[in-house]
Image 1 (cartoon, helix red, strand yellow):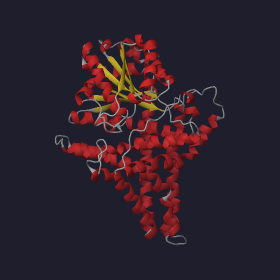
Image 2 (cartoon, rainbow, N blue to C red; image 1 turned 120 degrees about the vertical axis):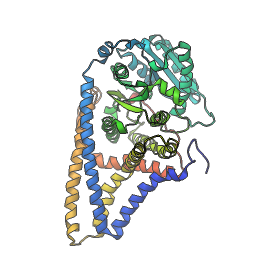
Image 3 (cartoon, rainbow, N blue to C red; image 1 turned 90 degrees about the horizontal axis):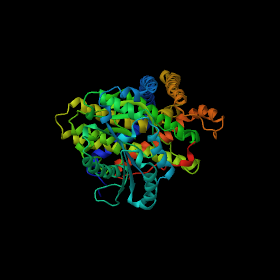
Image 4 (tube, helix red, strand yellow; image 1 turned 135 degrees about the vertical axis):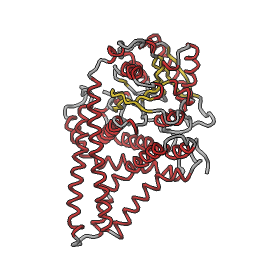
Length: 496
């Protein structure tokens, strides 16, 4: 089979996640059709597991939200100035972009300038693509003229198209930007250990205190060059104008991340985040031939340092755009593609299996934990909604009229468990109202009612924009139908 990037080298390993998902779905269907009583037992056990998992998740989300609110209440710029030598820290902000409007790029730069942190300690890198050279050159020159003097340096790069061994996308662009920045940093003689890099999507708007908090954490934790830093990603820039399923998916992603932030032993980096420059140089920057570069860069560092690498939570938000299209339907299509791209993180499974074998010094328990968490998360994402909301009903259809005590009473048991699980999910839904930005004037007050009512779509959203794109990604990976990098288009007109 033809290789695509780094894909295709380990076909059996690539097939395993999809085989697990389809295997369990098929097993549940066969039980439902040919051994319905056993199918009912299977569904009851799985729903019990799901209910307990939901409440375990809710407990962590609530704990993370409390940490989030506490962190928001602190003036971190005042706090960091009390630390001797804080001025030595430089922040490199990398902003890769492709075919974005000038307004989106400008807002990203203005967000940096709204921070109280010293911008003369910020190096901004704006990275375009050769396929968009003409438009990007005009935007970059405009931004340079307006804002370059406000920063320690303003670097513009253009990633060449068609480089052998690369997949066009964010990862290969970041790698090119990183190598260009290394030359500049070396010329400036800035110590590597004094540089924190934030790799942001172009629509990222960091909280004004983010860089102060980041510096404070960096200066006060042990071994700061052996950890990445994960903020709370909130897709709220245009949340008031987004389609209802898009809003549910956006908040769902934020809640998932909140639940992970209070369990740093299993935390990977996701989307816009920060990391030490020292680590990036040591690992040779981002791998250029995969899609999920935001999470892979953590595993690169973890392996490079033989397990002596971690992710430190930063309980401050970076807000981004929820997906948007020209109309409602286009927004839903864009949401599906975004979820499928995120689910393409399944590509980490064969990487971990093959790379862990090359690092016998890594504790076996640590290897098993990462592999299990990854597989379990991918399976749950792809299969759980289908098992709960569709396949769970089939045994009752095939055994209708039975007087078996288990058959007669199990619907009530399942209904009770689902009510309890749904209540847990709606607890997190209630938290979404505390994460909303101020309602823009052009949004009707009736939008509040829609915000409440949208959660009734949760089961449908779980299936259409959760399970199906995840199963799609795993199936493609299993069959060797590899995805390229799908850019989520940002629309300035969708913001309030």
